[in-house]
Image 1 (cartoon, helix red, strand yellow):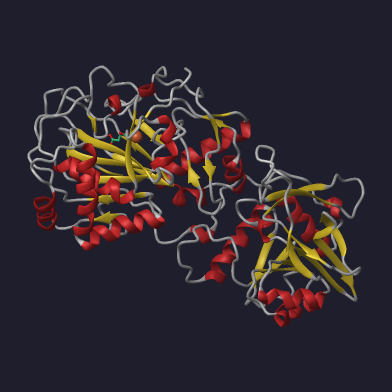
Image 2 (cartoon, rainbow, N blue to C red):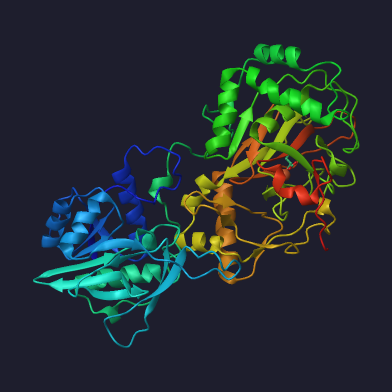
Length: 563
Ligand SMILES: O=C(O)CCC(=O)C(=O)O
Ligand SMILES: [Fe+2]
């Protein structure tokens, strides 16, 4: 099947709606090319190409085409119109006798019957016998209300037409009322990809039973609409970008002098110290304020922000015991508190470092080879911080006070916005399903390396176009083979897009724990008082959510795990 594509502007395929789209049409065409390839359809041209003979079917998608433009396509090719509501299309539908597009309500949700699901499953009837009907998953479903008899409904819901077919006076047209049926996050759902193949075949006059049901192609699909500015760079300090901010140390010292009172103690006067730091943010160099607030509002493709040059004062010997408060001045705690309060609220876990808000990450002999932040001789592979926890941090702050002796330790991060285009649409769909069991961390009392003793999760969640990621390479297992294959693909993708930084004194790495996973390489500790030393802080955008699991006025979350 050879197809020509005529696209307007994308409605919903943007992978990251917060970014600007310089060349919508071409990126949208790229998206369709990938989707068609996945469905086994050969794209031979896009709107501007003059290849009338090569193409046998046209696909019209997007919503900026005028009714005249669409009619011109219909006159020339059998046409699949992937419609969506919008001023441009309304006239077209009227002229085609399709009435209006209306929202189709989903069924009540089982868990919350007062809400409806915003997706439905519907049957796509085949025009040919001897083949089972296909089930299509429709996200945000719309249907044509008032379609006239000329249209043969191929799929209906609640008496309304979701997919319609017109074969009239030499014109053959299929309309699909919801563009999301074929959008990247949903094309691999149920039989959506097969449905696309069937509909194009129908228009091409191919016998429908000639199109086999088949698995959605498992080849990695590069959804071109996501491939934007960022590319993996190796060392993230080597290239400028919105992931990196290096304010002048003098300017930062001046803010410290003004705002960090000598009598202010982060351990004794926890809230007063946080208040001072919260206000100090507004005196910070503008570039730093801008970097933090931009990161908070729209994250970035790396899912990480590196702030450099933070003056941390005279750093005493590295503590051998991570628990407890080191004897030191409080510059580092101030930077952590300032950044945390600008992004949300700092908090801690009762089970970790005894609930300390300012956590020392130092190598210990005892846990050198255990999967925890105290490890050193093993790789701490890519993970979402506290992936298993109902209140996982939104951000993890890692502030370096001292690098390891041999400068070997590298902290890596990999953002899901960069990893997503490397995953097949099938894998992406699998990762959206709640079929993955992660393990509870060693530091929370779980046996070391115990997999799958935590909750059942989806790896990709939230907005399917700009998803959040929950992943722990060492502790997560899938409950299905397809899920495990998708986990392997994700492992490869994350490795490919990962960047790293060898943190040195005064570097603060802010990890967006919802959109990036992080890792740390092996290094060799000496336990001589001069080992690598980070301070870590967990941040949530809404501390109120965990109120029932905290003591009054406390920032320490105490959820008990049944291990
Ligand atoms: O040591 C590092 O660079 C990061 C370790 C880590 O994953 C953590 O402390 O959460
Ligand atoms: Fe971590």
